[in-house]
Length: 391
Length: 196
Image 1 (spheres, rainbow over the protein chains, first blue to last red):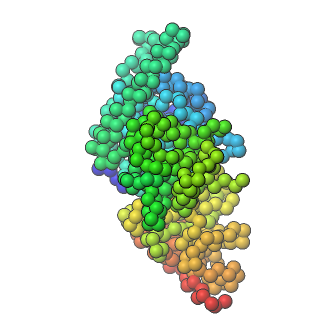
Image 2 (cartoon, chains in turn brown, blue):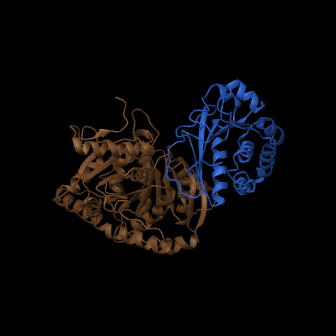
């Protein structure tokens, strides 16, 4: 039986990692991820978790240590945020290309400069093309549920890919809220032991991630891409299995009051719940609007995205990151490209906002929807609008 | 006290190191143990000892909480450090029918006369209580007693388990300080409209 517990989401992540009986945690503390790794260090040091905690000198080393650990078949976890994720950037590609099932919690944070420890999705978006499976979460329960799912997805023999679980820095990482913490028995029932099929073994030496000259590189990358696209069915299967054990459902794209709506708002991450309250208020004001949220960022759920938006006339998107000098929000841009092949598709109005920890409250989302509807009628010369910016 | 939407929003003012976040956490945990929906969180950002800090609690009787934004229009403001009254606008956004709960030697009447605060005011000399019972002038747990008395947000007994979990062998003394603050809190109703 799961137990309802009021604790900080970061601490709850540590507790769930403990229940997975992780073997290695290699991490460098960085705001707002710090409490996750501090708690894990404590659990290892007081003997509650029998694991190696490798306190490295940088995130680049953290991810490098994770490579080695995952390659010998050890269940491997790390966590980072913002600049830390950037510092491990080049190693992220190695993890996915070498098919290493590493699970990483990312407490999403803005990127410098100016220095900001606060939340947005700039760090997520910079890792978009690294070949990791990436999942967004909206509340503490979703964070711990998907951390647990991430191990099973990553370690499944049909997948063998690293997984990032994104939780908004502060808005999720620092929240003390009620969550149903799973029991050891439930976790054991849901998560089989990690059986990495080709672990490094000193008695059978081999090299991983070796030179890939032009004659094999394309094929290697294609095999990797084929595998990432195919992980989709296992991801769905894992969420289904999770639902059987825990009774909570997850899917790549999720809807809130969107049936039959001509206007849809689109968000991701913890702001989505605030947006739901705005949807309720707008409905009461007679505005027919629903909310669609992205859960699975990679592999991108093209079919679900098209299906969610096919009957809408206006789609209003919010990105908490900026593709500088480009099309505005990275997620909005991908949605536009996913919708392009459709004969009938909604007008897309893109906003970028909530950067560097700036809140968007309920009335903010109401304003965004009203402004979006207005722009859909009048048109705009801009690719996107910066929400709430002082010019 | 809950507002029209069945929600109680509390903003805590303290200084870095005074434990405002711990108070907020304890209160939320007590509410969660009563099967209410609650969450607590600090003002987001780097922590600096001694600098003014905020912590927030939302308690909802029936509806799950969706809003994670900082509380700008609180029902209740709690002030752990009386020195903050003159350097931070602690009543900012406080609802007209809200309440401010202050750690102060002064009576609510004195506070109203000095600062012109119109909403309800509750005071307790938490520093004195904390010094006498805990031996240190750290008032965060003591002030939880005042908050429970003034708001009836949770039952006093609901705070004991979270307190034990957090403070271990020091829990009993903190509970004693909390109970004394509960008894000694003085409440002055909101100023009637039209009176000066």
